[in-house]
Length: 180
Image 1 (cartoon, rainbow, N blue to C red):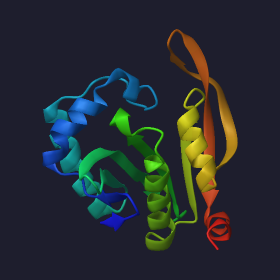
Image 2 (spheres, helix red, strand yellow; image 1 turned 90 degrees about the vertical axis):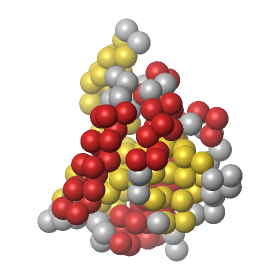
Image 3 (cartoon, helix red, strand yellow; image 1 turned 135 degrees about the vertical axis):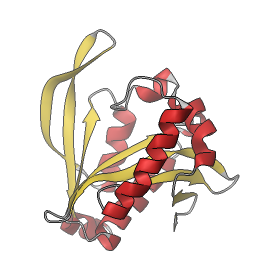
């Protein structure tokens, strides 16, 4: 487990499935994610089993985000597509529980995750993609030090119109300078 001031990153458990289903299946929550369709309890059980295999293989490190006080499930974050030879990984996060949006908890979770990536996994680069309309997410990433490195124009279609997909990354040296 990785503890911040207000959140803890821990392994997702089968006991989290009711919270994942309640929050993740909310249409508004899914709009900032790559998965736009609802999920079932069976799909989530298989996903958690798959995470265990991927962690053992060193390709994906996914965590449940838990509020420390009062103890409650907030969402999921992780470093995926870990490439040991290139020392890179893709970051993903979702605060599923909307009542905890805009409180800095996502920023704290991303900060813990980036620290894990650079200090524990010895990564050189962490990258992500962010939808143009995901203003909250982009603001979090920029606060941590991610820089926009590219853009796929009109790459996704939501709400009847096309949006750009931002590509952002953070290098270990930039992270170290920001955290001196």
